[in-house]
Image (cartoon, rainbow, N blue to C red; front, side, top):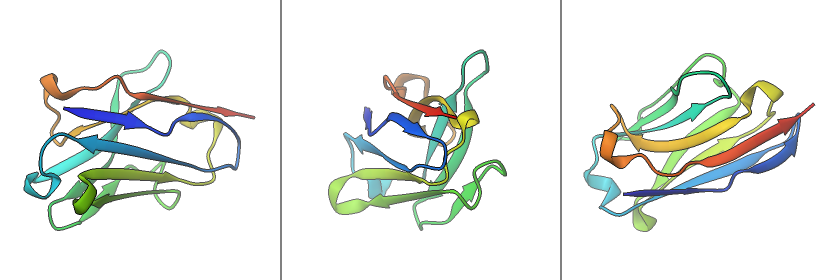
Length: 113
């Protein structure tokens, strides 16, 4: 199970840090990712981190978002900078590839222009 937090309302250009606490040892997970679902669109994977901390991002967030994890806290993070209105979405964490049973409630991020 996962629990996301850290979303909120922010102006364009602002920053937020999302957190994802896992119920199992995060060090044992091969790959985890952050996903988002924008209004009217399908959920998409935006950032992935491997067990060895190799990261990958989609082009639209590359250079603005940073995925990381703290093994001691079983927590994964998504640092989001220079936020844009098109980043408005519900953000989720899950395994990569995602597990249907592991979707959490997500956390809402709203970026105003």
